[in-house]
Image (cartoon, rainbow, N blue to C red; front, side):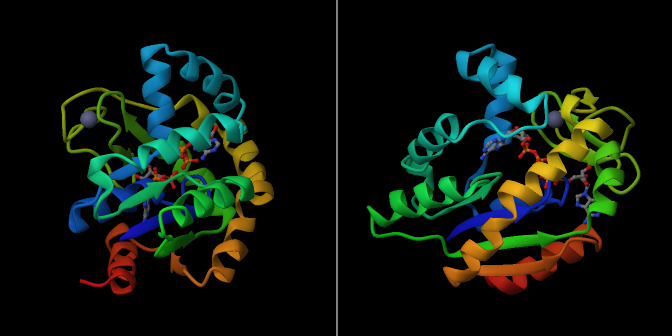
Length: 214
Ligand code: ADP
Ligand code: ADP
Ligand code: ZN
């Protein structure tokens, strides 16, 4: 099962992708997580990506596409995957379609988590991410058991630099301009599925399971 997650920053893509990966035993591949790991390790890719991420801009396509296409050849992708944060532009979607077609494959589901911009600012300000394992929480909606500490691994939780309100607004503009057109793209491919992202996270997941099958 090859799934991509669409939706604005903060829509809940990562939260849902982690649950999908667990239920269907497929890897969760997040380009944002890959970039943040590279930034932490101080790699060249990390240094380049950070310049864009800090400004709320997308990392250029040429730094993303080969990385993802290569990742999709790993052994763990044999039964599919859930891609979170890729594609984010039409050229990325076209590159993905082409790379998959070369192997006689295609995306099975493009899950679009629908949520108005007003809800996003609130969500992002309350998002806390684990510095070690990438788990995400929300200080009000999905709090960790102990404040500031990851339930899964015990590490510290932080507010991401790019989750500050000014940067979130920029990311939303970028989303509407560059990523939203993918909704049309995948509608035309016949694989788009909309889910309401404003409801409780388990209800969003329930709607997704309805689409993917038990
Ligand atoms: P969110 O889902 O909250 O927007 P992500 O973790 O997916 O956050 O992405 C964080 C940042 O990483 C993005 O704002 C962008 O700068 C960069 N990024 C992640 N994926 C891509 C991609 N496919 N193309 C370009 N930039 C990306
Ligand atoms: P994305 O990957 O699309 O940027 P996340 O999954 O990181 O989004 O979610 C953004 C923030 O909103 C996080 O703090 C997360 O805990 C919280 N969140 C996710 N889903 C819901 C939901 N259904 N209701 C309320 N808050 C949510
Ligand atoms: Zn953790």
